[in-house]
View 1 (cartoon, helix red, strand yellow):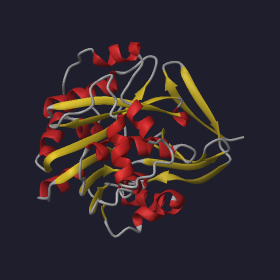
View 2 (cartoon, one colour):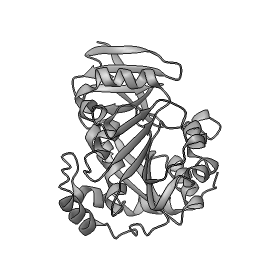
View 3 (cartoon, one colour):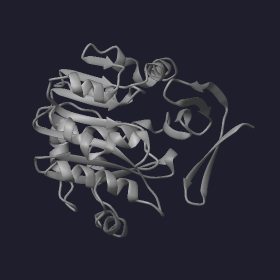
View 4 (cartoon, one colour):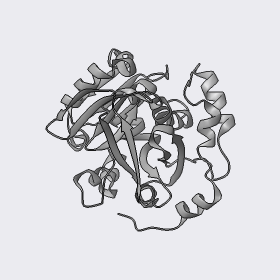
Length: 292
């Protein structure tokens, strides 16, 4: 049987049987693979890295999106950087008070592939009149746009090292430019890579960069079963954020109830708990690192 293999950690490799290849090729920007797995349903791979699986993409996307929107008292304008699958936009649009979502993804061909192969994930999002989809470079968008956003969500691909072209999207200069487009009290959240037994350095780089540009930054994470390890995120704002060891459970529960927000994959308790790490991992995350 055909299978797809990917390194999960130093010395570890995950092998996934492929029931059916739905699409495989290369756009102008990246190689893509859509396949069906007996364990995880439809799966999406970009440049050899698994991005999402049907079985648990809701865990990843709810955890990426909702902490930032729940921490903001009244999010109305939201910017999504990347998010070609459409699931990030789907989650943002669950907040009925959101009036406009601008999604900027450079790869139009990949977005169209997702609209076709992941329609069960994203059909409602792409049909929502509040969504403004712009297939262009995020740097070009920021250079021309004069609007301010209440919340920014970074659903961009991972970077291999700080010399890669993708790394500029996690750099201090990029976030310095992004700050010019934030409304007072804005909250930003970005995915920040896997936390494995051997490596937390990528996450620490992302958090250190955000700490250099925002008054406050905090780490959080959740287990995404198809990733086979903890997945991490960083949230940043000039406003106060959850303190380590003090998850915002009451706030998340109250605001989810006020907004009649349903979170079928996670729920307010799991999202609040995502801000608490095991002690050994927390100590590794809090040690200093260079800032880019």
